[in-house]
Length: 112
Image (cartoon, rainbow, N blue to C red; front, side, top):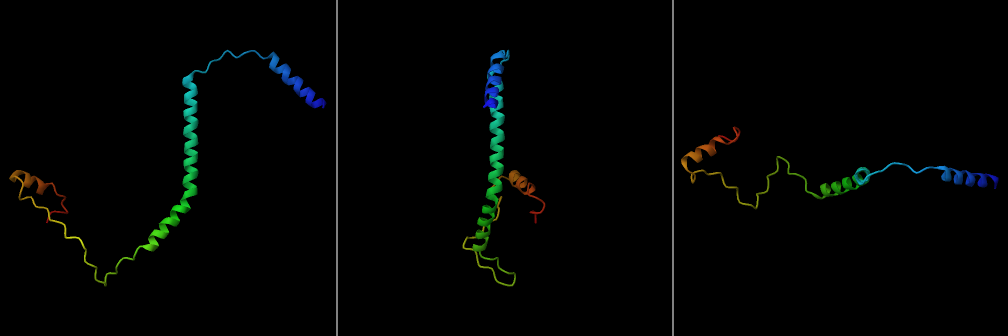
């Protein structure tokens, strides 16, 4: 009981003797502090979510890969595509200067 009484008396005397602080924290500093705190909390939660969801993403990816058919081997004939073949680029409808420009703008590997 003496310890509690002594602690309460110390607190009352300390609070009673203190003077007011002659300091001012403007709204800009407070908003900056809150912005930094929110950014820090968002980064921590994003990191935790990434670490906790990583195994789940791997499980989903493994299930998707297991469900897809394997690629055809080289000795097996490939199935024909149900889509029509892609049209070849034709520059005959362009003006002569534009057709030459289109032919020159191709990548060297595409030129035959």
